[in-house]
Length: 82
Image (cartoon, one colour):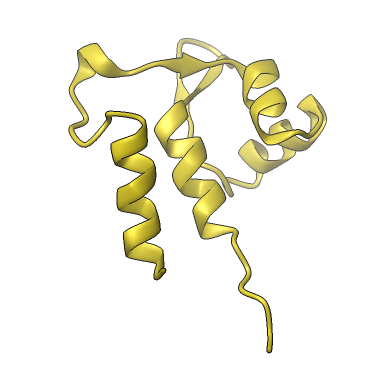
């Protein structure tokens, strides 16, 4: 399966083919870290280095859309070498 098919599958699985505002579900840093199985500190570093998509709210608050986390995770996939 190529990357495009994988992204489409993730989008369909989450029912998020459209980016309608009413369908957006935002995660805080702790929830994003839990979803990725890493620490809050690692997520903060990704945000600081702008290596992961995020939504910046008033002040220093950041949130993550679930679909963006899933798509970012797909981008990090490294295929096995045969």
